[in-house]
Image (tube, rainbow, N blue to C red):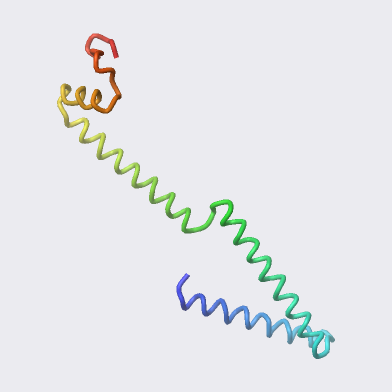
Length: 116
């Protein structure tokens, strides 16, 4: 959310409060009663919005978290493809040596004879 959008949200909340006050006055509430009713309505809306925000934050369904997950999945896929491409470009001996160095193969095993 940009600074401008934050300001617009603040103005919208202010306008909802004013509109609620006018609506309650038009429906027969007088003076302070209309103000209290409008404030109560606005408070319920803000508490409800905050509750949904907290629910999204706790469950991890926030936009930023979803963007990070999507980015990480794409990054992992690209990295895996690049590593697989480089591994495939190695000679069979280099592949075996790399597999042994990384602990993927038993140093004593000979995969050519089926001892992997």
